[in-house]
Image (tube, rainbow, N blue to C red; front, side, top):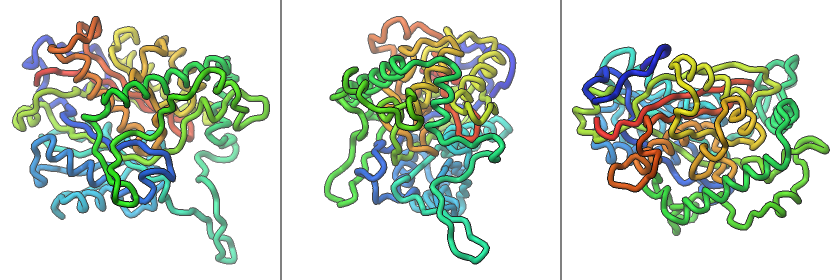
Length: 414
């Protein structure tokens, strides 16, 4: 895993350092609106079926797993990674660790696992993220008299930085970078349209682990968010949601969701031993800090530094997945990176699918592997992209004024 310098040659799989980390399998649950079809699932119950399914998909024995690394943002503590691993049937000898970088937690968990692989050995890691916003615990500070003082969200930064709510920060970005209401609405509409087509055509089927709904009667197989009824005129009727007279609305913002997503990551050498056919080679990652009042631009700063460290222009990227918490911040980041919106989130993003906080970064990686397999399959008619360098970027902006980006190269053959 390289942090600086030009990209490694991959003219042949034999040219690659066999210790480089590679993602060989990735799965997720359906992404459903908070309070919706998955509302009875606690975080560990959402994650456990994904972990168990990954073992089957990758042909792993449970004792092959070195560690389970999971991101989570608003859970109740207690190390959900360990809890879910045991519930998934992994033996007590397999440990687990839960990490919290808020919205970036799922992607950062994968980055952490990749760095552990790169540090040495041929460990096999299950890494990703989970969020059950529906069952997240109520939070309270204890007053001086011992009575609880409930609060809606934790403070992300000291008050001197303003600590804006997410929607207010999205308005700050829209104002600072001149992102119009019209652009935001058009971007949101495109996300819903793409996700609706992908859902209807079964694009997500191979990456999704079905779950039974809260009644235990119906099986949830589809994402719950994409809306086929949206039109420009409908979106134009939404009022400003966070700042009076603003441009950020419920229509061009994501909704809270419940979901889990995880990957199998190991060294290239171990992947070959396991008989893996293909995978996402992890080339590098970067996490940046930015002004908390403009937290939505964190992803672009991290991505710009990452691309620069690899002497890589953004137009060489074949696939880009970016968490669309708000259209304003997505557009500001894409403008900064000189990436056309139509090149990003080819099957829709969080504006249509929903934002499951700690899981969202892992969903990006799961989507990249699925897209790469579809678009770079030698047997498919994928068009000009099939002749590209097979480079993929995942990036996410993070509460508190941060952003994480990770760079991959798809290897059709290991």
